[in-house]
Image (cartoon, rainbow over all chains, first blue to last red; front, side, top):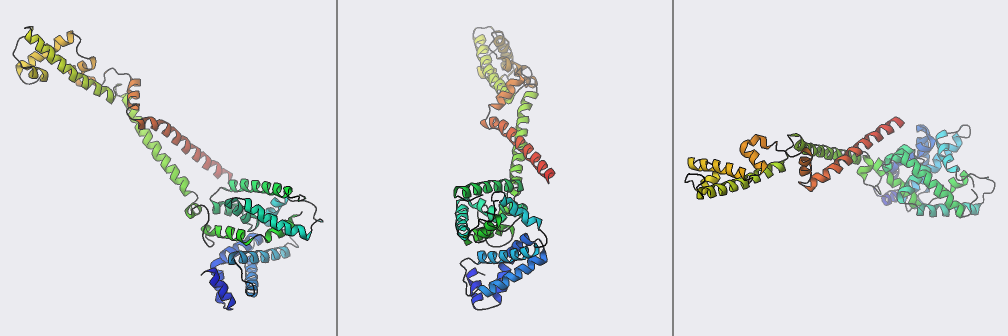
Length: 185
Length: 209
């Protein structure tokens, strides 16, 4: 079913919307949650929470891109659960992915400002716009969807080594890009 | 800037980039349509590699067979197909020379018999023609009008195959018979190198995992 029709079902408050959404994007959403949480039960719960969140937010929201909207909600739910879970223990897998990025970003955290955060969002968008499509997908799959190298390699038809090298170069470009814009790295 | 700030900013990245990355996953069985490379490449990343290896194998085998054929030209007594052709053509020339010599010899009374020149040239059935031909052959031979390779055919057709063309000449005559033969050699070497490279790479990757 087309996304616009699924959104229409949400506006009609039809429960078929949930069924259709799950059928179309369920696998992708559960993968995102699973990548972050590394626990099937937690991932399932995060997905269900996300579905509830989507049910409550559409309407009034009418997303231009349903898939992006759903991914965002699922990711946020998974991250919330992750933060809750990791209050006591660390999930080494997800931390590893973030630590890779931290190498090019690490700096004291007490200088953060709201303006900088907004500017950073715009700059990240700009940076992504400068990348080739394949590099952008690799970057997003790794740092937004938290995909392991194996899955990215399968997705792009590259070897894991290639994916790793490509990500290293992208991170290096990101560091240079952010430095040029005066970020304290 | 710390990672949390970056993570928050990344969380608010433009929808189009999220959608692009999400839809890219389609080929791996998640949803939507794939961008970029063909879906068959994503579903079967090893397929194209397999096809390339298969093509290389075919080229390598074909090239090896052809080169072996070329080498066999060197091997069978050193006589190439070109050498054989050359000997046969020379034998026709020799026939003409013999016929001419025999006719001249007849005219001058050097040899007897009333064989017609065409009978002499055939060297065949009419007894007189055969006799005249033999005589003509001897005279032509004495005069050095019969090429060595043609002489070999006349005396022993089997031995003609072993006519004294060197192995090197045999191979080069095969090589220059067609431009495809020249291309086969670098093609075969490249194909063999590629196959060896891919096999070694596969072994290295397997070891690494």
